[in-house]
Length: 100
Length: 100
Length: 100
Image (cartoon, rainbow over all chains, first blue to last red; front, side, top):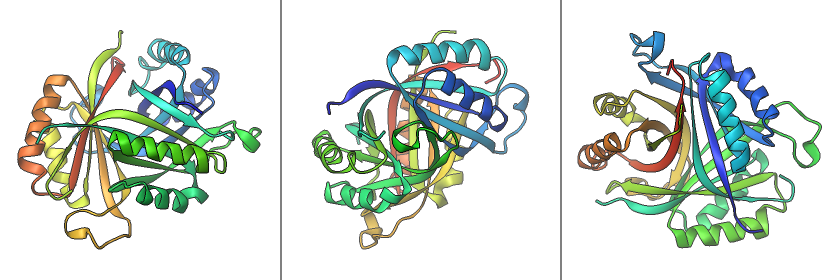
């Protein structure tokens, strides 16, 4: 199989947004994703005064460009205003097996 | 030292493929890799009916473009047909220390 | 909000460098970062004879191109010669919420 030009969407969010993001990914047409826990540190929003690291989760999902656009649009309209969250996209070349 | 144009190969696979992938990376000439556990979710293959997240592992390895090609060719021929697995490559610019 | 062209800097280092890297990121002007533990494997430096995986940490930080340059310059001059460490940059497009 040839490599497919796709987008990797990475979403880093506070843990309380985990279920909401998982639902969004399913609704947006993502076929699957991975998620893992990370420590986050930073000065943003109400947490400006905190230096300590705190628990975040990081989602990574591979999507075709058209799905990426729709996903990012919904993230910006509905999620970024409500949660501590950052999302970014990366250009990747994907190989998948028959089972995946 | 200048930045080197390299490829990052990311392999997400079911845990039972972990040792096989580690061996492949060594054979393909990778000088090192990182691996960490992730939760995966998705509808693919025999697991279509499952919504629950399950344990996967994610490998990341930095390789020159020529090694990337060989690695991807072996993944497609030997691994993707046998395991729940997805692999993708990203263009990166690398700085290494003398010790690495 | 439109997508912003940014750089993702990934730093994989031995655990003992964790605090030093976190300080560097703060000094370099990064607004936040994530960090998580990974298993590393490889043949480099004094650890050539080891095949077993060992504990590393992986930092990921989103920075504008100008900050990326300064951060990489300091990493190369001060950190790469002293620690088991590799750093790489990736081009990404970022969406941030008002809170982040």
